[in-house]
Length: 157
Ligand SMILES: [Zn+2]
Image (cartoon, rainbow, N blue to C red; front, side, top):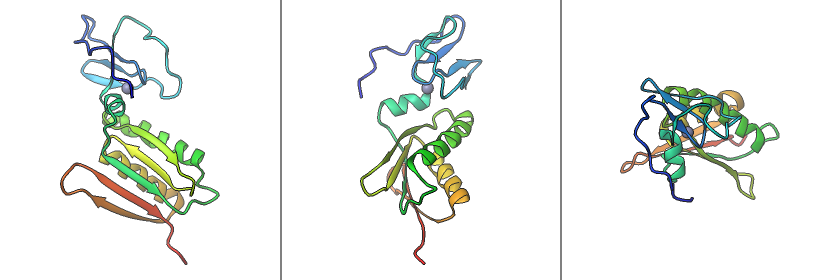
């Protein structure tokens, strides 16, 4: 990941910051999302360019949650997972701007890995997957770091 060439500016006179990665706006001490899908190429008004707390973690490759989906089914395609993940991320981000999804990837065996910037977001996504697709969850907390690994799988019948 390319290091940021822009240094993080202090808040402008207008008190507005703009996240160049997701288009979020910081104003009145709060980060607000505009639209996760349609990213504006430029802030719509004078604002200082920066990264929101979640995007800063993503760009630095800092993650605290890992969710592994095993035993894929026809309903649980990579696209379906990405859609569900985006919905949960959108909700969580509003409560905690540090919560972001770093990546959603599938390996050759059909195992899907989701990396998140907060443990909380990985847990929320795992619960949503379980709610929609049933299955079992194994949650393992790291004793040393702030890190959670969750495995979702379908029990063999
Ligand atoms: Zn952002």
